[in-house]
Length: 294
Length: 283
Image 1 (cartoon, each protein chain N blue to C red):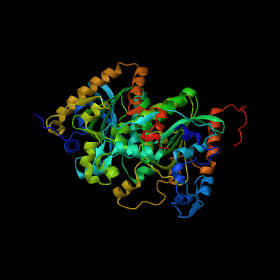
Image 2: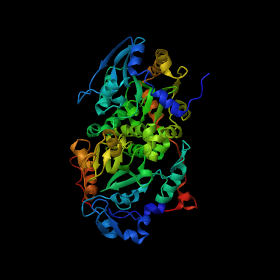
Image 3: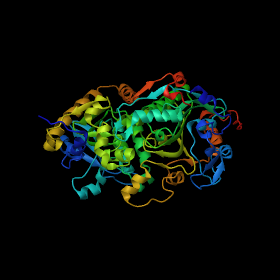
Image 4: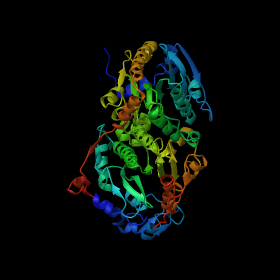
């Protein structure tokens, strides 16, 4: 696990991912939006944003490039999931699914958390791994957010959550649902010391994540085109029996409807976050000027 | 003698058209009650009934999902599926309870939050999340009773409480069985399997220490003696409130924090085991 994080890149370039680089198939990457092929390295240099503007999903490790060089240090990486319902069905076996996802991602569960700094500002961070059962929110996920919020409280630093999740983890039943109040309780306490929680919604943010910490953040930033909603598009279409407009539940739709504060392209995230955090942590007008990005 | 009921049997009982609903509880338990309407922002949502009443001489805030008993009433009440304005009405009553130091009783009976374009446009996720945050910090005792279906975030949005009570044949799930089957197996007809696998009965949830108390129902279900079931539940609710009313606010809030903070199933694994031949060594 340690090596995994030592490999974190220096500037905000997507971190190395061995599973992407093994095969020649990945030399060229097809954009799921416009269909154009882009050379792998060129795409990574462009933070995995296609020429058409489509923001491709990043892994939790890739996101660590957002933080100051060498600043990220993982915490609570020793928490691993259980199978509390002994979830076995003819088509689905949670214990097996966990093992498969752990092998695929090298993580115990769908989240990496720890401390880092952004433009010199110390922050507590959590990053979801969508490739781990759709970034779903189970007990470990909830515990890591809760601990990150508690650590932010103790250290008196802001909290940044980077989110991509399909919702609560069905295989943990009501225990997964109870992670919603758990994380919101810890965030409420963080709010009492005046440290902000910034939620970064990347594609997609649905269900339990949206119905808890991600949407009660002090500041909500979304990536362009990220899909954000409580109920899934398919569920709504089945309910109303008609097709939904293409931009429905997009970040831009949510901005227009007053549900998020801003849509920020990936290339501007680092400076945006750095400037925002400073507004809360350096409130004195005589505070030293903002450092420029490195 | 009671015959053992499957999880799916309980789902059917929890949805029985004659099962007591929130307004039945109000009728049987309250000496006086006024229903309040609207979220002061957009509309009134008939899927949630909220107001102030008196039970055994004590003024209380009551908030509950309300299903209908016929098609017409179900349309009006959206089958007990609240929209954001319903949750924001509940939010208004939470603040009301805090302002006037009234305990809160929440009655849960919903298939889930309304999934529609209008609800999404008005921030369904945000409405639920804000309620969870407010209940977590509410400076007055709050108790919930699952009287029928506890469907996902739609239930939790009025369910973050000091004590969680459930009727014997009620259910509480991360998603309704049909939705669970659709999400997990892309086949909503497998709902009975989902009901069993996902451990949604009051007995399952008591075993997992998620809920506190099970209220017995008459043989066959609450619909066989609605008023009797309600009176029984009423005694349990008021006894619970008596206990909570005796606590200083700081203790009440600490206990609530702890109650939810410890929820979850996980283990600790030494990080270095990842590279010692365990399945997790793959990096």
